[in-house]
Length: 123
Image 1 (cartoon, rainbow, N blue to C red):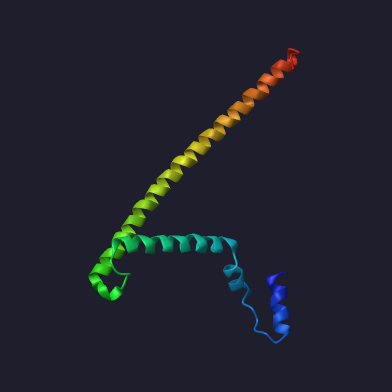
Image 2 (cartoon, helix red, strand yellow):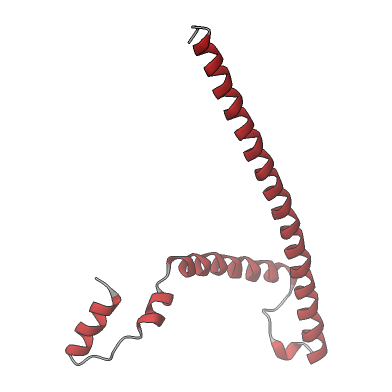
């Protein structure tokens, strides 16, 4: 049943109208996938923190400067990883292009050889 139909039914029954666009975003499979992955990462980070620090994170245990510097360090790490990922993606895209060209050359060669075999009565 479409969001529009659902909204009309709810509204006709005296219920609140549904914000269809918001609902569509909240139920989008990609966002659900992102949430599942990031939820797992959050758990991994908490476990990693428990091994590194005696106490769970408490902002009042850090000075403003320490928090700001730590954020900047984490952001810097993220920038390094993002550039590394971009480099890898460019390399992979070039490799894919080269493989497609090679695949096309092989198809052309195969077609040529099949035509020659047909002409020579061998196919």
